[in-house]
Image 1: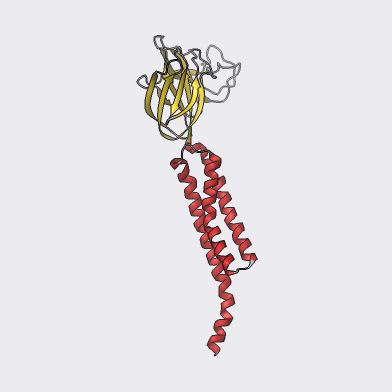
Image 2: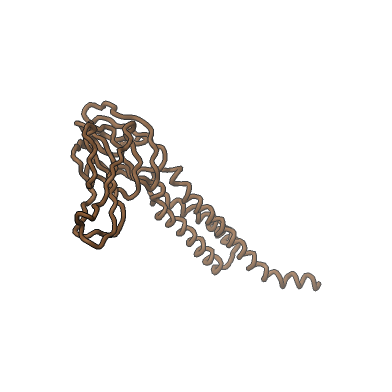
Amino acid sequence: MLAARDAADRAPVREPARAGTARLTVVALGLVLGLSATAALPLLLPWHSAPVLGASSALLALLPSAVLGLVWLRRGVGSAQLLSLGWLGGAVALLSGLLLVPLWSVYRGQVRVLNLGDEPFALWVDGRRLARVEPSSGESPRAGVELVLPAGERQLRVVSELDGRQLFAGAERVRGGSPHLFVPISGGYCFYLEQRSYGDSGAEPGPSTPLPSSESEPLPRDTSFWLLPDGIRLFVPNPQPGPLQTSGGTLASLRQRRCSAPPESAPE
């Protein structure tokens, strides 16, 4: 008789503890599902937009809490516990969805596409037509088309807009968070990286004050797709030194010239 009474007294104490354990379990499970989806979905579904993938991650993170909430609702659990579960599940879902925003650049690479030929062409990536690229022979920071492509190996195809001829077809790897250059039709132009180093001096440049040194590094000519250094400026000449030397550093710019032209000499 006493044992039965003790068990009845302990039952109200155990029920909140069990509910708290279940709540923490489903919240942790939702966090694992949400973070895993945030990391995997951009790779599994590379052509879906960030809002769609973020919403999918949030829904997966919310799923365990929603299932437990339905079970509790059928059992007649109090509204206070349901509300607490809803707040926790919603917070985990929101975290999983928003986490994709700062990570999005990791799954995308910037690709500048140039057309140095005589006719416009269409660019297809993984079977999708993404852009029409007009011819442009002049060195300009606005030349070509700037695209953001999913990271990984992409199937590129270039087709003439005039007669439908295939001008290029091949697979290239896009690195997330990095700039790239794609020139399927070079038109006799070569590309090189121009790097200029600037020293630190408090005096005006004179006969005994060296000017910033400049170096040219040609890009490989056996490909039409290049991975470029981070922070590079596209087709913008590096500035000449001003009246006063500034703090030290190095600027890098992507340049183009006719392949037959000799390299530009560095200033002395």
